[in-house]
Image (cartoon, rainbow, N blue to C red; front, side, top):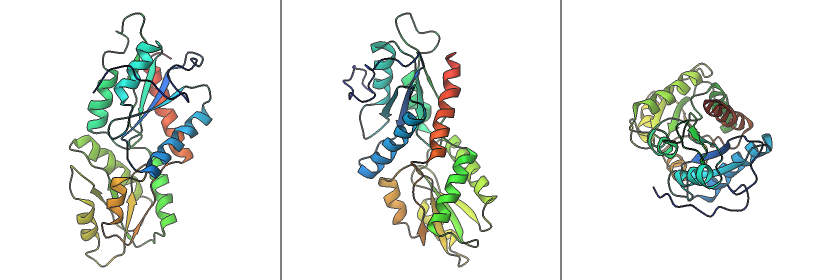
Length: 258
């Protein structure tokens, strides 16, 4: 990860006038080369700006796109001497949350020296009951029937905490759906989405995939090709996501005493 000071776009850039001393909200997503995926994440952050016009909101990434989250935090806390809260625009914990985002705020808490802002990292967006509600709504929009088998398609991680996060969401969905609900992963965890679909179809049921993803992109394209009868749309943007982002921000800002 580089640490040079970046030149940011004029819209919502760290050089903008600070807003009432509130920490800057850095919305950090994975990043994608898919234009519709990029638009979905931008729309989510635009909704955050509309809901909280008093906040300065920046976009950052852990992969594929620029600027990197560490560079954005560096510019905010050293270039403008403002505090920053990084909100992972990620549905579960995992390497990007535990390593990339954690490292971006490391050493920038209360112990930071004078002449610098401070930084903290929020929890990922999930698990959260509002995500279960949103996932159930997307499934209904896709045409889910009561006896269908549902496979939740999650990105996957080698870290056990990420799977626990997804399983908590799956447990919530089981309370809302009478048919079986299982989980498949895109990478780094088993079963894979295609294997989970095959297993779910074993008793002859129709299989509907719940795309537990914020936006279109590489993984969503693979889910569409995995052999399900129906696939729900990604989650973003949605007012419930906006509320979760702001709740995560508020919790992490409280750590900074703001």
